[in-house]
Length: 134
Image 1 (cartoon, helix red, strand yellow):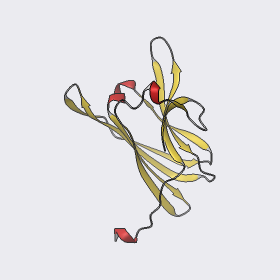
Image 2 (tube, helix red, strand yellow; image 1 turned 90 degrees about the vertical axis):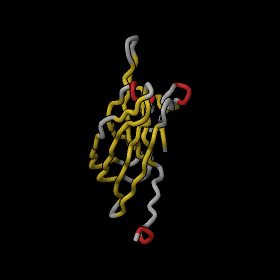
Image 3 (cartoon, one colour; image 1 turned 60 degrees about the vertical axis):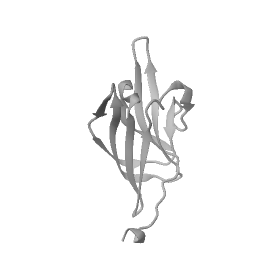
């Protein structure tokens, strides 16, 4: 049965963690969905969670679910704020969306300590510094 399903590969879609603002006391970070396609995507569902080991103990964050009705072409949408304390965990975003009647899905995982200044780029469409997975 699984072999009968079409192989809908996710292309030109990214999840980015961007530095929103910075002060002496703190930094504000947000997670964004970026549509780099020349067509909109619809009925976008994203689940997010963090997991891994911290101070020798297994840690899991709550699983959050987000629904976005439409993301235009060459556009972005805010998914959620993210706390710097979770950067030492795996931060997983499972994305599902439709183009017409076809469904696409992909898992994006920011590995522990991958959200660091050394890995920053200027995120396309968003034009902010951060880390992006495509």
